[in-house]
Image (cartoon, rainbow, N blue to C red; front, side):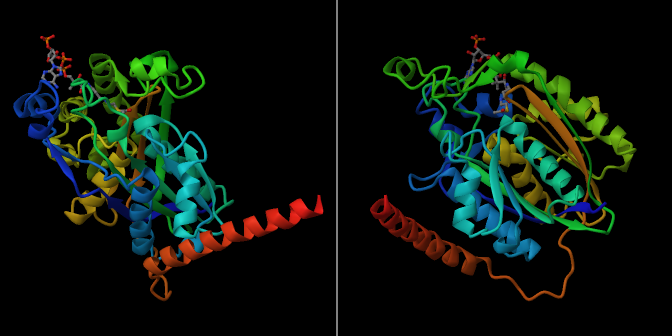
Length: 368
Ligand code: ACO
C-alpha cells in the first residue's frame, strides 16, 4: 500500500488589512475587547476582483512549485470552503480550469472549518487505495462577503485567505499516518449561513432578515470547541499508536486564542507547541490550518521527520484531527517546473475550449 505524503504547501492572503481599530469605526467594539476575547489584532480582506478561486489558485501554484509537480500531473483536486464562489459549480472546478490541471477530477467538500482536515484525509485515502498518485487540497475563503458588518458578534472574527497542500504517493513510509473525523448535526444551528439554499431561497425577506450572513451562537461554539479539540488530538494519536510526547508540533484551526489555550491545558502541553497566527489573520476557516502550516515551516517550527498533529472544528458541527509524519517534497531528478507558465497555458486553453464549445454548438444546432 502506498503512503500519502504532503509534498507541497502554499498560502496566499489578499493585501488589504483591516485592524480592530478599523472595525471599531463600523460597530460598537474596541481593540482591547477583541484582543482579550479572541487574540485577533487584524485580518486580510479580499479586494473586489478577488474570489475564493483566485485566492485558491495563488496558494495552489505555490504548493505545486514546492512539490515541483506540474498541474497537468494532478489526478484529483478537492477544494473546501465555507464561502464558496457558487452553490455550484464547485470552486474546485474553477481552480482546475485556472491552473490547467487537465486530467484532474475536481470537487468541493463541505465541512465548514474542519473541511481542510476532512479533505486532506479523503485525498490521502484515495492515494493509499492506489487509485490515484497525486492530489491537490485547497482551503479558500472570502468570508468577509458572508459576514454582517453590522453584527459585532461575528464581524470581528473572520478573515480572507487560502492555503493548499499537494499530496503524492510514495513507497517510503511517512506522510498522513492517521485521521479522525466527527460530526454532530444536532448542533447545526449553532453556526450556519441559513439563506440562499433550498430551505431559505433568496427572497427580499431573507435578505432583509440577514439570513445570507454567518449566524453564530458564540458561547455554544466556544463550549463545543473547547470540549472536542483536545479529545480529537488524543484519539488521532491513539489510532496512530503514538503518545503526545512523540509530537513536535500541533497546528490547530485558528478561531480564537483562548480555545487553543484550553486545548493546550487539556493536553498538558506548553502553548508554544502550537503554531498560532490568529492574531494576524483572524479565523480564515478552511484556510487557517494550511496557512498556519506554511508559516510554521517558514519559521522552522516544522521540520522533516517531525510528527505533526492538525486539529480543527467548525459548523455542522464537525471536528477532526490528523497525525502526519512530515517529509516534504519527494526528491526526483525532474527538471524544474515553472508553475507561472501553466497559469498562462491554462488561460489560453480555457479560452480555446470556450470558443470550441461555441463552434460545436453552432454546428450541432444546424444538424438538428
Ligand atoms: N465588542 C465588544 N463587546 C462585545 C462584542 C464585541 N465585538 N461582542 C459581544 N460583546 C459583548 C456582549 O454583548 C456581552 O455584553 P453583556 O455582558 O453586556 O451582555 C459581552 O461582550 C460578553 O459577550 P459574550 O458573547 O459572552 O463574549 P464571549 O466571551 O463569549 O466572546 C466570542 C465572544 C469571541 C464570539 C466567543 O464566544 C467565541 O470565540 N466563540 C467561538 C466562535 C468561533 O470560534 N466561531 C468560529 C467557529 S469555526 C467555523 O466553522 C466558521
